[in-house]
Length: 447
Image 1 (cartoon, one colour):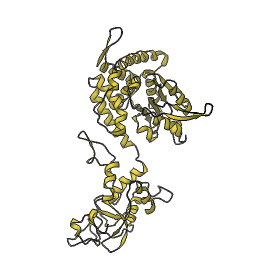
Image 2 (spheres, one colour; image 1 turned 60 degrees about the vertical axis):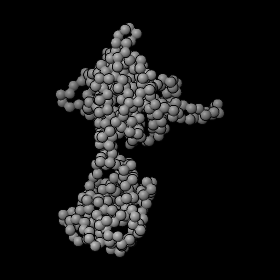
Image 3 (tube, rainbow, N blue to C red; image 1 turned 180 degrees about the vertical axis):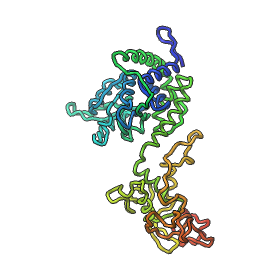
Image 4 (cartoon, rainbow, N blue to C red; image 1 turned 135 degrees about the horizontal axis):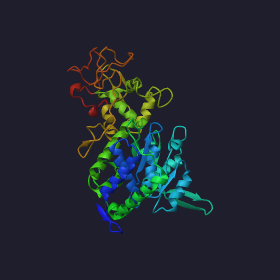
């Protein structure tokens, strides 16, 4: 969309965003087209902070030094609305900086964020809480003023960008467009950035960008763009996509592609929480089995060489008791089962997990958005357990031949020494005597 400024000059939104992208590319090599689109739209969004319900974060992280993260933050400093750059700030200073002008807050730019949130820096829960709360409008923090004996509300809503080595806290990245920088390759060149020489160029472009954006604040406030994402990801990307739709041209398509691309990259690079990791690994441990004893599930999880379950969730690794405690948060509890060999023990049925798997770690086939699969962390096969109930070709039950109870419930490991689970046509459930060929555990009287 175009607009006319006070001097009668027509400003085309798409061309203006293209110009911002070109200026950034002069000084920084970005890792992808999606990253460039996200950075440009985030910078433009800082000029319309009063229009947004959510203030997306921009996380710029790199695996090593000299990847351009600080230079990209310099670009944000030169082009964003009311930038407030810092390398280390106390929560109280940030609170006051936002609270001084809550209707027009500064854009927080935090460099060297790994010194604040890194593994050797402590948790800094107050600052992390501020950044998390400030993602959504109307989430002030409360402080008691002893001098006036009153409770004071301090606003937290503001745009924020963080740059550092390594991952930021997951609660911050969950609210951010995450740019994963990389070191320039041979042949990739950029111009050196000098504030006194190049700063005025950025400032002139920033002023034009501000003029164009603020001329359409009403449109942006009422915008309801079609989103390719859901939940918090949609909240984070809505301001960026609204601006792309306002600009027109090729930007609406580029913005939606960038959102899907960066979200997929983030999911691929982010280690799942311990509980989600457990759910995913339990699904792999089940394979095609319909029910398994708790001891068998724990045994399979602990023997996965790529999993942490031999050491966590506590010293000594996963136990049946710890498994039950972790799954209880999802209303999954072990029940008594009687198995084909006549033994009875606590165990879990696949049906117990079905709803939880669909909600927290759906497969690509289970989750689609506007007809497109939502990328998800793939299941990793447990060594020696192919995920379909089969056994290793060496005939052993598990790596190093750990003892696994002989089960003949449909889909579980057979006991006839073959590579595949066996199920005779006459086999019946010990509890309800239904033929296992059409047995439903959900209605089994022995469950």
